[in-house]
Length: 148
Image (tube, rainbow, N blue to C red; front, side):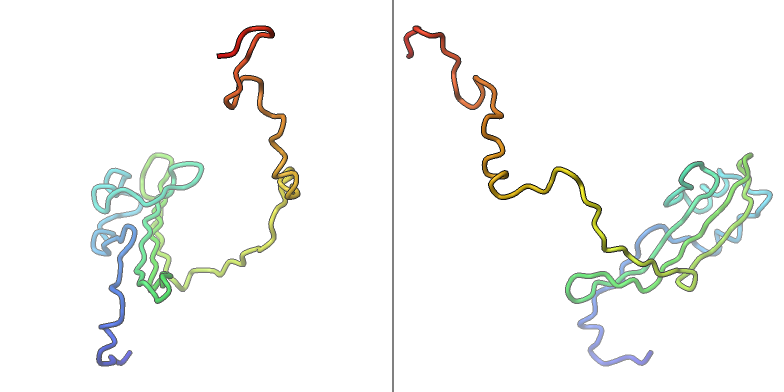
């Protein structure tokens, strides 16, 4: 990509996010030999573990840049997944990059929740009669007792 004079002046700085894994440290992990403790010593604690067990550790990182209008632009994203056997030995190491990403269609439907459809009059007068005696500044008084 050619450099435009003065373009760096208006660009925001790149921000590294997450846990970037050093490729040299990753080459020191040997499937079938290295343990969880070895992995943690070499590359640190994972960003995330598998949802229902501790059999896979995920190290996620990205490079972002602030765009005009305060939205983030993701320039690069990497995930390293390390799977372990039940005995805690490294089984497999996988690397994922932007080429492995899939677009997800966001559904714009809204699930209705019952009880929230109130008219303006119901909203204005809905609390009338809900206060118990003695609540809200009203004092309980005995009939015939002088008030102070």
